[in-house]
Image (cartoon, rainbow, N blue to C red; front, side):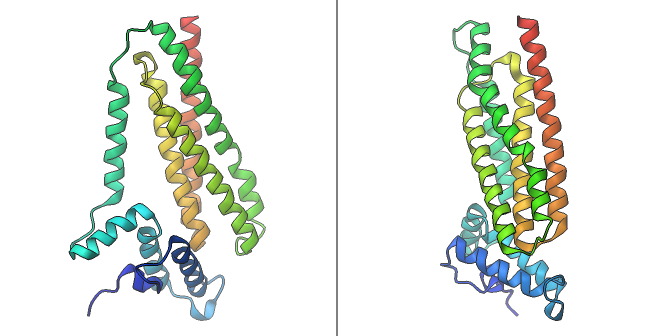
Length: 238
């Protein structure tokens, strides 16, 4: 028996838009979730839906999966690809050729144009999670509350995209390597955390919620370490 494709599991066409895939996934998850419909609840069906959506619900993973279907080969792992890209980018930033500018001037520029605005973006993302969760907790199955929470996550993604552009806007001076590393890992943690929380909004599985919250906690710690290192550096250079 041929294994069904992710599109067949979600009952959508391979030409479906991302919005259509998302809508179909939410409808099917509600159908099989025990908290919303005990009569049709099915753990196996929910697991299949989750696996399918985690691939074709993400545009990058979907492109990889579509190529796999066309070639009739096993899909390449998009998570490892993303990690390799991130590691390569980080190496480029750390090894970027230093200009002939004075080191103190470079430090001042980096703190002003990179660190400060990135830290501001991180603050906006980190401070707002708990109030948003408190609001959603009133009734996670209320579509309006869930849509508000999804809108909040989209705002977080916009802020993170802005922070990443700022972080990549200039090479990191050698004397800020520790600060830059903490910012880099903080951004990665928040990106993964938002992914986990987004999965929760679609399938209501609390493991995604708990994982996302824990990643937020780790990201907050990384931001504090970056702040401490930045304060120490500016004091030593002052």
